[in-house]
Length: 263
Image 1 (cartoon, rainbow, N blue to C red):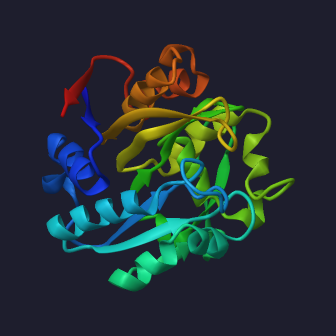
Image 2 (image 1 turned 90 degrees about the vertical axis):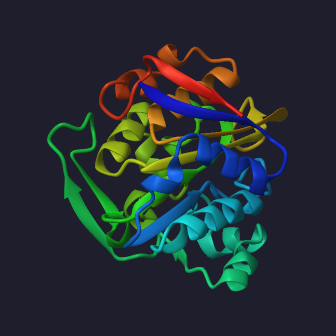
């Protein structure tokens, strides 16, 4: 059974901590190595197109309180230059405040991984720094024109280095021939270890210019499929009819017997 916390939003610091406590995250965080918080900074637009820096600060403070690992923030933007997305949304100020390293996945040294059981990506390039890191996927809850929703799983497109996947935009080659299959494959190579979803204000309709939808929630889970299923349902989609979720069911997590912990 997969567990998903669903907490009423009060403020980021309070609600994120409550959601993570509900899924007993404190005892499951690594105590050594590298933890990378991965927001959705697809471009330089403000929230809810991108992840609110206060959500990242709340996750950072929680991790810092419960882990001795090194904690960094990483992203590889889909449009433009990553450092510009960091600057535009207050991430450089956050990094300066706490001494946090900001990692640009589009510029990091990349390695090649190969997989025989993937759906369409028989090899991928990922930043070497990501390979053994504990990844916390921290997206905004949004609809998406290619995959119905973009939540914790599709947020992992950000780890794909732009030089290898750039076409019309930085990650465009991942969107063909099937974006849904690429979502599953990227997560098969490197799935998020923990997911926190900002569903305080969601974006309905499309991921770059949709309508704000006040849901007033924070979601958290160690199961990316389950948390994406709950999030997709909040946006009015039947999770079993979202292709990437049906493909990932049983491979990367579960759509079945999801227990929702309310807070």
